[in-house]
Length: 67
Image (cartoon, rainbow, N blue to C red):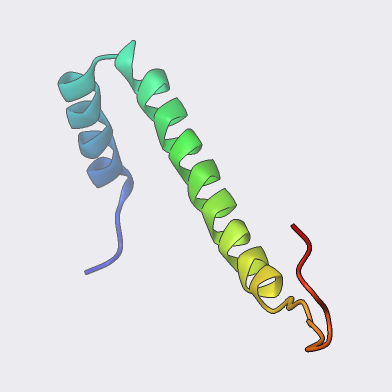
């Protein structure tokens, strides 16, 4: 189990072509690529956000409010 031969891959390819059609496959792959790019962007954005949360502003007690 785990070894796919050439015949198994051809059968899978034929089923995919029958289900989605030749014109739909490039569109489907483009959507998958967009999803992967979005996922990677989301992961990198999450890595940057904790660094921003660590920033604090110090206030002195003797400061007076203006207004």
